[in-house]
Length: 565
Image 1 (tube, helix red, strand yellow):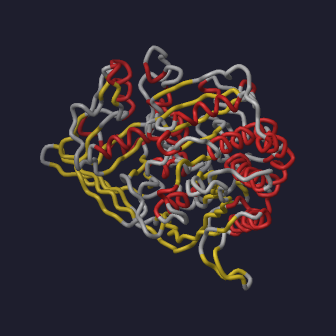
Image 2 (spheres, rainbow, N blue to C red):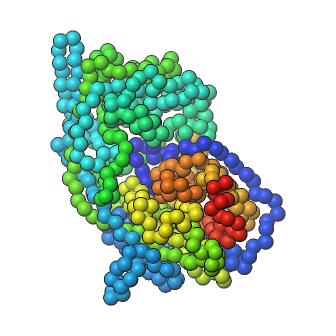
Image 3 (cartoon, rainbow, N blue to C red):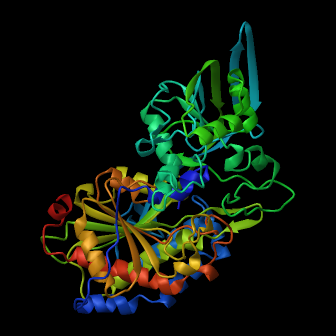
């Protein structure tokens, strides 16, 4: 699953939904068909372990996009698809003398590395004196993932506090400040984090309001020119600590640090070659930089945060005579990655043109500085699930009525690059896609002690996101779970967002469903290893995915009309 440069976004993308429902199993279970019974028996822990123990081994070197391990994973999946008889629908290639459609959809990416010549300059004026301060890259600031090309932006600065807009608490930090064409100074965190009477700290609501992604999108809608993001003392360590300590991949909520004589190599940044990263430039800054920006107000970032928290009153303001100039420079390299896709054609002459996609990303964070990020849960688990589903459908007693495309996406960890490329360059008729199922991190038990969530309470838990325009899927899931017995939390969403491969399809209007078992302390750590996977639960989840796919693929009504209604 793809992380953004700060943990607030990283943790919450999947929880920012409008509607919530949780329905118990529906009493007496229906009778399964022979093909459904076959799938439940065929999909077992041993098959899942075999796939996952292989692709999440050190041999695959963390499966980083464009690297040897990811290419080995793609070749492994393609070989299995060929052996099981799936139809290749990818690029026409010459593979060992065999010319024609392959299982690969290749796409070019650009790797971009920030250069130390990148700068941040603050200009301010007090009375008749003009002050200019220039700050250095990876001493005073770092460049967020919203920037991928050389750029220079200069604009007045406005302070927007936490950037929150919460009408229920009459806490609206953007109401009385004009951020259009301004660079905004934004704080991480939330006011009064431990006050459970406030809506953003309440169970089921916290993630919705903590979501930094939502705040940044709101600033983008308000046409802000850029963001300077700072961490006040109450919200965690200052940015310079990341440069002074070897903590590039430290986990703020679990205080996991690496030890070593040199800083860990940073995560590699990539984007699709034919498009720039969209969004708003974000520079992460130290508190010292924030205090210099605020110096004309006679206060510091920690003092202004305390005032906001004490009075629960926005302190947003335009900073008079303060201008920021953001300059980012990069070294760029052209590389390539690939998706893998194989089709099982439907048997019904009227329904076979309708295509269901089930997929998950196969890449992870690679190896560097002596560590390997094997990504057993993220997303070796989803990859193994897709392979097991393809195998089960390929060998079932009868084919489904609708066609099913089994896909593994490349370069998800670099920004959903593979799935974004697919929706713009589909290997099948995009109009024929009726729904997309996404499997990402389906092998662990959610563990988040800060929110009172513990792994031992989640040994049977599955989170499912489903598009609002597809109520059929919600009903099918509850019906099929009578045979599986998972503890399901169903979240129905009008617009499915988030940092996984369902999002590009949802943005194109395709109804989606997303299986996910939650975050844990080994997320994006070298310790996300096979020995920590709950294979018993993972097998139940993949069996449920099989039943759901079978039900949708053989639904007798007008699938598209049902989804639209």
